[in-house]
Image (cartoon, rainbow, N blue to C red):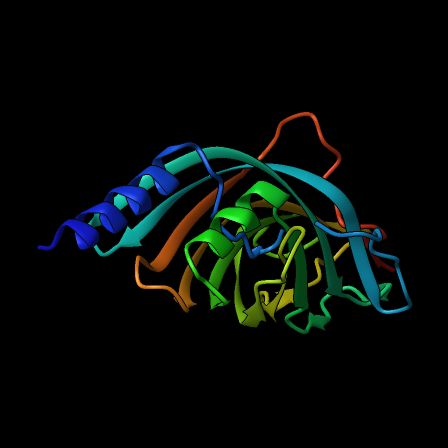
Length: 217
């Protein structure tokens, strides 16, 4: 290896190791949160400004490099009916997660020559109340090709289906609570980073229920 090539590799290693949060959440889930808070429209439930602690692994030309923890936020929406009759089938919701990195994360991706990210996310949530088989669920989200901007944070918008449900036999409400998410991303541009694996954990003490809930009546 030439002296020039060795120098480039050392610079790249330093760029990743100096604590730069290059990882791009989705939402991945995400996800993960944005200039304007999500607004609730008819047929949709939402929760805004959720805080996550995320850790990531960069898959690089010289091995896997762990990074984190980093702080991100997310706005989540889901297509849900406002009310259903007892025993009704409830179609799988379309879940959308807007996730925003901090500026330093995006700065490092730019330094490494990354120009675009795309991938998939597994977004966990829990369903409770007047529903058959209450418990944990997982939404399968896709992160479309997203350009890394020239400056500022990176915002990804992931979307995909949740799980079909069946309303219970009584009356009451069905609640959905947003949880953690993971994301697998591939990158375009640059020669050092080939992909990113991100795990984001919802910070405690937050109201993470989608609002409004589904009324069974």
